[in-house]
Image (cartoon, rainbow, N blue to C red; front, side):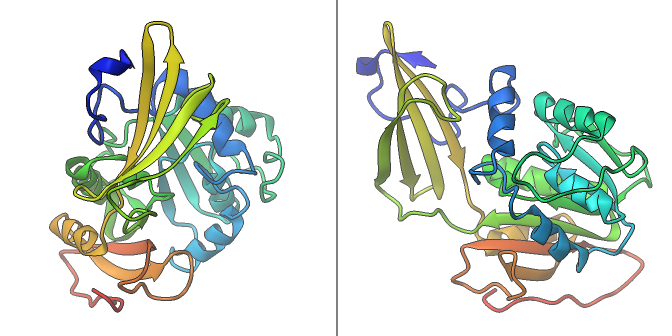
Length: 301
């Protein structure tokens, strides 16, 4: 949004729709895809770590299971999961990412430079579609065995939508199936101050020279990256808000939609999460009304 500097008395609120980056917009689609495929950055993707993460997932998801990668981006996880024998569905709101993967699939091209080598999965093993996660539907009885919500995707939404997203995933997974959620439990910086600023010639937020500022809002647990670009008549201001999910809140919301904690890990390790864990990979099991099973809970609940 373009505003006169003098008229903006206070910074925008977290998730302010007038200033918030629109991840599904055509303007951002190509820029996001380029960032996701860049092996030198981990801001939107982690091409160098995908192979080890898929190996980790294979220890927790039965072989040949049907897997939904919710917010799959350019399909880096999807390709390796399909090559490992899973039946994979990748969905993302970014049409450029899905178009890229379909073109790769059709041409059987190798992975981008710097990523782990992959086999070219057949269309029977993997499918892609442009979908809004909140609107995705499955016919009655056609569930996924596992649903993945990785790389802090849940953090891109305010609390009401975070709860709604968990409810949506619960509807898509089969009874007894697994939902995997990766997220931070707190911001990377202490609250109440501007953490850093720098002048950028270009970044994910803008291709024009601009000022980047990162701020943590303690009272709302949010982290905001803002871009301020001088333009004729004022300043173009754009921001990207993330909201980490404290572990007690995540477990409480999950329980409310029929997801029971199976194990909460300290990142992509085999260690159980504790009160000090900053990033978790949480495994939930969809409650099966026909079975009564115990659940494993990590320390620090």
